[in-house]
Image (tube, rainbow, N blue to C red):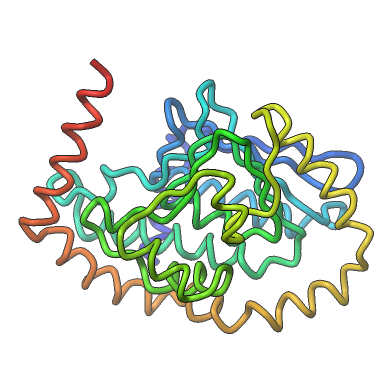
Length: 276
C-alpha cells in the first residue's frame, strides 16, 4: 500500500530518467540518464521497475540492454546518498526507497528476458548490483566496478553479498566487500565481475548488441527454465516486500547512528570539494 500510494501521488511529477528504445529485432535498449552521475533515487528505481514490467509484458521483446546516457564517463554512481543520509530523509521515505530498489533488482535477476549491461566508466554500488543481476556484462577499458558501501560506512545488504558471492565466489567477494574495493576493468574481467572489456566507451553498447544477437539464438523456454532454477530461490527471498519493510527499520536505525552520519558527512564534503 505504501509504494502504491507513493507511485500514484508522485508519478505525474516525476522527471523522466529512463528512456526505452525497442528495436525491431527483438530487444530493447534502456538508457539511464539522470545528470550528472546517474545517482539512483526513488524515482530512478521506480521507473526502472515500470520499464522492466512493461518489457516483460511485450511479446515482441526477448532481451534488454542497460546503458548510460550521461555526458561523462559513468554508468551510474550508485544509490543517491540523499536517500541514505538520515538528516535528509525519513523512515517512510527510506522504506519506500529500499523496497523499490530491491524489488527491481530481484525481478531483474530472475526475469525471463536476456539481460546485458553495457558499462561506460565508473560502476560502483547500486550500479554494480544492477550489472551483476544481468546475464552478461561488457565494460569499457577505463571502467571501475564494485560494491563499495563499506568504504562509505554503510553495510552491504545481505542479498547483494549473496549475489556477488554467487558470481565470483565467496573468497573473492569477501576481500572486495569488507573493504569497499573498486577494481578496474582488467581486474574485474579476471575476477568474473564482467565478461568482456572493450577499448573505447563507444564500443560498449555496440558490443552488447552483438552479444545480444548471439544470445538470442538460444531458445527461450530452455534458457529461462534453467535461469529460474539457478536464480529463483535467492530472487524470491530478495524481493519479499514484508522482509524488505522489516529490514528497512533495522537499516534506518544504522543510518541514524552518529558514526554513519559523520561518515556520510565526510563523503558529502569530499564531493563538494571535487566540484570546486
